[in-house]
Image 1 (cartoon, rainbow, N blue to C red):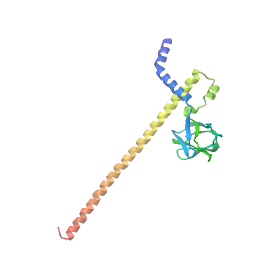
Image 2: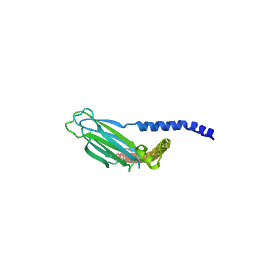
Image 3: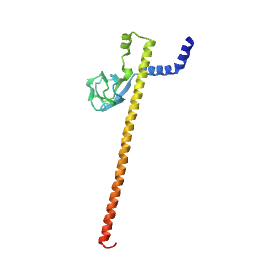
Image 4: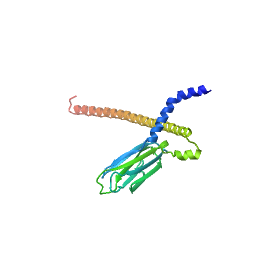
Length: 217
């Protein structure tokens, strides 16, 4: 029995190693560094499918300024709905669950009119399984160590599976749109050919009448 267990673990080692590597990269990621110009707006966006939890934390990085500059933040959905909007802040966070699939955008700009140098902002944007509060889960279910790591890996696998289903759905939608477009192009080609035949027939008829009136035929 012990030998079979060992063989199973050895066979599954590549998959476990890949999942652990993925989990490690996700854990050590420190977010995005944005360099905001003194005047202007900088935006970041992410394509997110339906019913996904999004959590983001942002703050201004002090970089030799006499005082920390403030900024404004606006987050919008694919259809332009306002999900988060704040002004004159040096730090903050936003969280939401996506109601629609598409491109979600977060825009940042500096409030101060007297700011001449660029402002550095750190944005930690977490989506799906990465946004889950694993500390609360561990305390609630009283799990730790390997059990908690396996629970996280299970969540990662489930998240990947959901993403694959989303991509498959998008592919099916694009195929339907492509088929409809091809059908419309085919009907347009047939109609164009029919119009050309009718116009050619009318031109021949008018030409024949012209020659008959001139008694050339």
